[in-house]
Length: 294
Image (cartoon, rainbow, N blue to C red; front, top):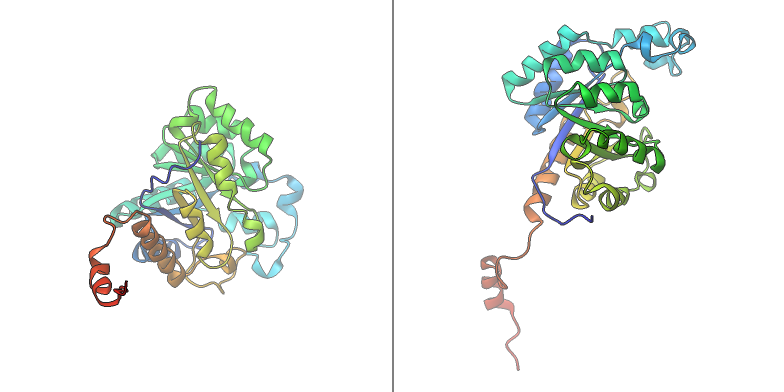
């Protein structure tokens, strides 16, 4: 199945992730800024670090010490973690200002916790899309949409994931796959937007929707991804790209998110055929400028 150019309004996710720096007031401020910029969704990240990390990884030093919030990588990750009650509070805050909440889940325990308060969708990051114990929980116990990125994932692995959801007829009604390149930031030459066309050709009839998760700089590639058929556009979001942390530098700030929303909405408005051979806006110019010499 190729994309049929049946465009819908873009669904835009501001991924706050861990850019809240472990502070609830900052998280809520970022939710408000995302709403003000025009995003329809915000997304966080949920980890059970003792389950996700090996003992060696947990106790190692952060690979970029100036970005660390703890003496070890495990302590750093724990500092940035919100518990289930805090995530429920964030969802309630999102509901109160009419923006939709979601989170990525990085392990089985986190998936089981987050599904208990019924977000519209849960996201599987590229790093964890081969955790079939977690995928089974999302497929069999969660009732919402499952969104999944395929950065650093082979085509054979993508087929295995889709087939796993098809085992219980859950791929077509519930599974959205995101074209993604796991580079931070990803240069334009590596974003490989024609992977979106590959997804449509191979999975357009087998999964629910196709999206694009970008880690590049600027917003031009998001417009191209949307034009190629990505129904969801996900970008990391922060208030200040100079803040301490690994994700701020390739995130969009408020102005960047505003530009993204404006660019995508204008693109959506433009993706149509002329309603008449000569549009009303053209008629005046035609009368004035069109060559009359025979």
